[in-house]
Length: 322
Ligand code: NAI
Image (tube, rainbow, N blue to C red; front, side, top):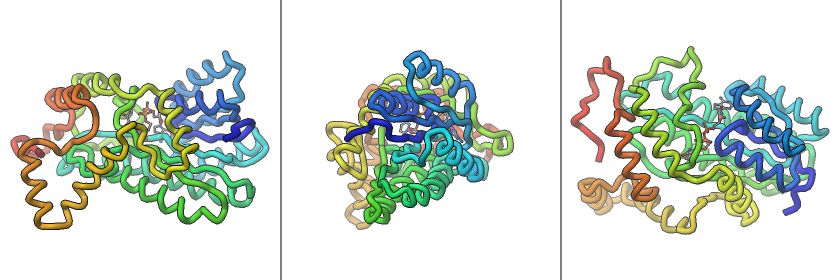
């Protein structure tokens, strides 16, 4: 693909995977907008791009705010003269806790950023891209967590499942316009997502989940084992060039998805349910990631990641999911 002068709009572009994607697409010749809710992240990223003389424009944006999103799209057209040909929606947050402890605010925040943020981007950009008539790309970032249940991250895994569906739906819907869709589904990346709680708005702070420095630190130790952010950028670009709709950035992608979807198939039959029960006894529910990553995640869970807040009296910590 020729990326020269293509306009590429990246949410969450100030840090983590979005920053990695911004580097890779900028180095390939794109003119890039990085949109992020964190001013400090945008400033740090812009220092990187200024040093390299890259054509990158920062926009402070909360993706949950659709008026602000429309203003960001207007600003992109003012700065670069046209709507983007490539929209990469990477902004996302996570919070861990038992599904049964989830509060309204846990869903409203996590689903708000991860799903509402993404459909805000689609509603904002799709008409502009169709009118521009140049085709293009809609890339959304989900997660392997979107393919199955996650008893310790219900708002997160349901929002990512919805994004996988949105990408396949928009892929079918926008084919006649030459606009392609792809969803990028990594497992673990070396990013700052363990600090996502710092961007949680005050009006959505009533969580049912326990958060401590120790659990954040253990989650960080899990994250550092994950994929490098520039590699995430390269894998995003490779997925687009392969023309896949679901991009699993690992060599054994077919086996990963077979494992993840086999559970869904098992949920449909009585025999499958028996198989699942047997596997649950062996503790096989979390199937993705290396053994070391699984060990670190288990250590994080032991350190309190995924516990309910102390004042929640209906969650029985002895009734652990398998
Ligand atoms: P990160 O926390 O390092 O970067 C996310 C960026 O999004 C941050 O710069 C943050 O300020 C921004 N952001 C958060 N809320 C926002 C909002 N309301 N509006 C605009 N920007 C906002 O996290 P990471 O890991 O780079 O996350 C990127 C995407 O990758 C997310 O969608 C995440 O769910 C997904 N992902 C991450 C994995 C990981 O292990 N780190 C694994 C699988 C998927």
